[in-house]
Amino acid sequence: MGSASCLALNLMLTLVFCFQVVLLGIDIISALVSRLQDRFKAQIGTVLPSLLDRLGDSKDSVREQDQTLLLKIMEQAANPQYVWDRMLGGFKHKNFRTREGICLCLIATLNASGAQSLTLSKIVPHICNLLGDPNSQVRDAAINSLVEIYRHVGERVRADLSKKGLPQSRLNVIFTKFDEVQKSGNMIQSSSGE
Image 1 (cartoon, one colour):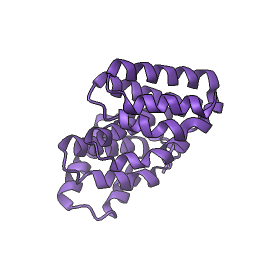
Image 2 (cartoon, rainbow, N blue to C red):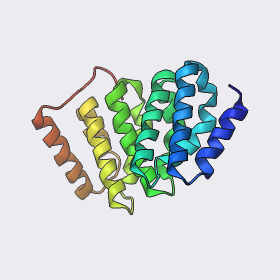
Image 3 (tube, helix red, strand yellow):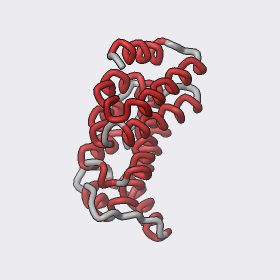
Image 4 (tube, rainbow, N blue to C red):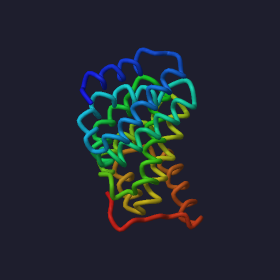
């Protein structure tokens, strides 16, 4: 597959506003990932900006299919950390749905690949910034991301957040959710992961 083909698909995802056409473009890229496997890695930088934009699409079906494709890329074309290193800009995206979607995608990545597949110390500061986002959905998604990281990593997350200079009232809300998860017995703690 030439980079011209990926560029054309990228352009289609960027400029098209008809959600059925966008879904078709996502399907085509998904088929390419399935076919090319790790050879698709060279195209990730070309398609990722448009895929990040689609995380903020107004249609739920587009956002869901986009997230599924991102997870597929992490599973078949490149390791999760490689992809996440290129997705960090999504935490500062102008579209609030994209900022929310990147948090949801992180939760899905953790559940699919585990905490050991990511260098979470690179990602947590971006999530902390979203705790002060003007949009409540983004703030909630950021808290849920931290709770999911806590489920996988454990008390190190609490200790790390205490050092981030977050307002005590915000920390209290987050730590209460950590305590709820711990009491529920839903901890997944892996032996490694940052």
